[in-house]
View 1: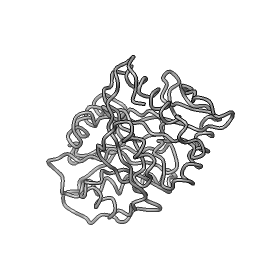
View 2: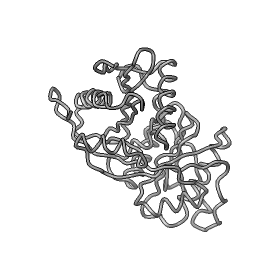
View 3: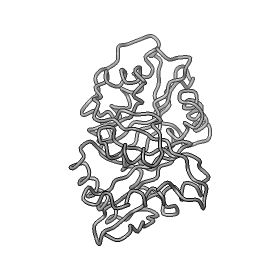
View 4: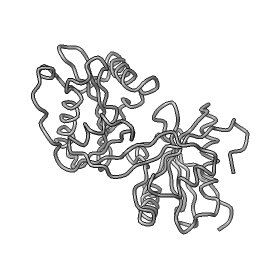
Length: 296
């Protein structure tokens, strides 16, 4: 095919979403595993900003890259049709993505690749990226294991929907940054299909979590417990009630991600019935200044 032409897509149409899904199917059938394409996000992209990049061969989508701003560092995830690799498609998509990120004044991005497939790792390393961290992707089918054992520390726990007001937004940001550090507030941002929860004990906010019901499976994000009350069963209680709420609202499968070195959280999730499905690597890469060339 000729030199790849990258199309900017400010919000994906129904036909474009179908084409991305078809590409995802071809890639996973060939490589195995899954692609972290964040379907709940890309279905609801605002049309005013380009976050999806497409490469076509006639009417067939052969390359895709999605930009996601979950924290201080944007994430890039995508795929190239196995039949069209080594033709510069991935390089062209990355170059355009880095141009967009540079305009947004970001200095570093994370390239997300499946751990189990060598192609993504080779590509990231060839572009000068270095491994930053890895995350397990877990899935729960059916009801959670439980209920958690009754404990005095959770007897007065109340888990409620977050209000759409400034006070609750400040509470959630505070809990997330106490749990995950500065820049973690993105995990509590609720989109049109999301529900944010606040856990309170005697009127005092002690935890938070977000439930994304925008796709199948639904997703759990930003489960945080205030550091001074950890180890009291609050996280387990919040997780259990969140899983039940998801089922009440029609979800039969739930997913979440946890860093591979977070043994405590991994133990919590697996004890609730979540099972490991795959693992993804996050490669860090410097963003060239606007107007300079990306690595070839």
